[in-house]
Image (cartoon, rainbow, N blue to C red; front, side):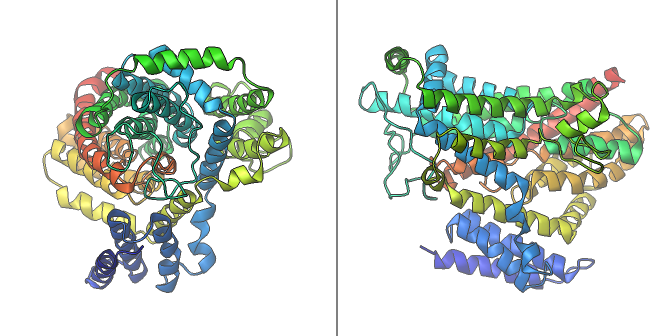
Length: 536
């Protein structure tokens, strides 16, 4: 049901942004910003269902000439990350269909299930560690079904004391957090009015947020890191090695992860369950009674394990560079010099999207997945992510994001260095809620590098270190967007489980956006004034 007041507010926001006089901004860029204001208002207020709002984006972009053709306007819906999300949903459905996710979840619960908060922390730590070497999206797709399985087991014991929580709900849910048939989720911990569990919310959001934070830890963890390093090398000839990045990235993980855990499990969604002893005992009893995996379950485990292993291997491409023949390296990891199959550029068969998509026919060939199973996944979230990517692409193509970044940076020019870092982090995180973090890093990092020499006196007259400091601050901040489902693929995957409404994500997300802006500024300032000189 559409909210007329929210629709009116979105229309007013569009007109206001589209008509206000702006110097130096082409009309098509201004209309792109107006589209962002329109969609952002609807996403935040819920004036329309979130996927439907996403579908309005290519319509508005085409109608107002922001993009030349309808084909260009819908190109974001075919972005590779959309298909990775599809693959993650299908893998999760296969795991749920055969009870494999429950088996894995019970193993985790049996091992660490001494308190609800400790369980959330353990799952978040595992997610962050995986996200350092494989894509944030792939990590989230693997860990979310496990998190849901644990939450359902604990919730079932808290509500009824029964030994079997039943099948984990599929991802075919609506945007209100209920199932597609209109009923509320089954875990009744008594934490929310419609049956949604605080523990379940903390688990699922914890996975998504931990994936985004963990990706900052290593040079290969997330695309903004690679963009940042490549831009520093290209523009000012400065090289950051894999080891040097660890000295920068790991402190953000070490601070950000427990902070996020605290916000989720103490400040916003404190679990009402205090004793999980029964759930832990039931998990052990279930694993003992259910016996070894069935043939179908073994096939699902094999395909999922192979997919995860290939994702992991693809993340370690740097270990093979220079050690494998060039054609073999290009065939496996990608390259521009030709592969075993011919001359020219090659994506690499271990590209994580290719690996994820290959898992879908593999599951069907193995006889463990039917098309009816695929139909049950949350197609609405896939549409939502496609609309977000479409909007981000339009903002980037029209230089609207660059205009925003440049004007924001100019507004704080001349301020004390720490305040500049705080402004850069806050603005980057805010814009990243609507624009992709990769696009934001690609656009803002060159601007920040160029701005660095203005602050050379803060680093003993060294303009290079000043540029690196500002670029790292902005590049890392680009990975932090916690408030909206469209902000990051991990957020979209978490939202797609049907475990939450947009408001459920917005509550901790806004707190974390503010907190991580401050953490980014403080850590970056401390690292570059204390630690970085020691590395040099």
